[in-house]
Length: 158
Image (tube, rainbow, N blue to C red; front, side, top):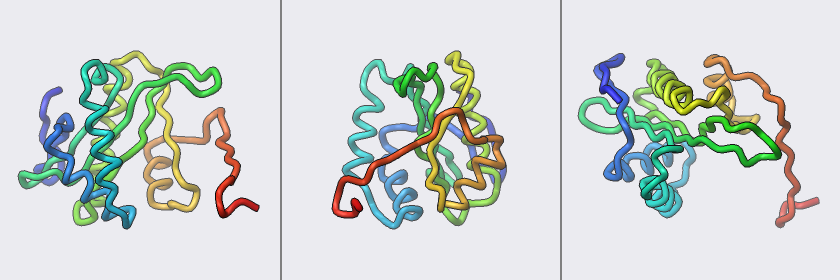
């Protein structure tokens, strides 16, 4: 993938093993929790031999450091769903937000998914996460053909 210049001197590039700490930091700024063990597991699995063919792992670099990321993969496991691209994590450092950088990450991810032969990209978003919902809707995402259902079985079960 070519490293092309973007707004504010930023560039999208492939995610690297050494980006782990920055991804954990940015995710923690958005979620309020540092999930280092989860991210370490993702990085170990994501960089395993043979996984690159289905993974889309992007970093957004500005001022010599990672300020954003997007992670996804190609899969077709859900109830007869055709193979499609899934975006399962996207984040931009708050000081770099609202500059079109997440859109640049998504544009590159969509290009990579298309190059892998998929015709749809999906994601899941909490219905009360208005900023993330707004981002995906403004990027052209609409309600899909599947409805996510869940059954509480833990302490919060009715």
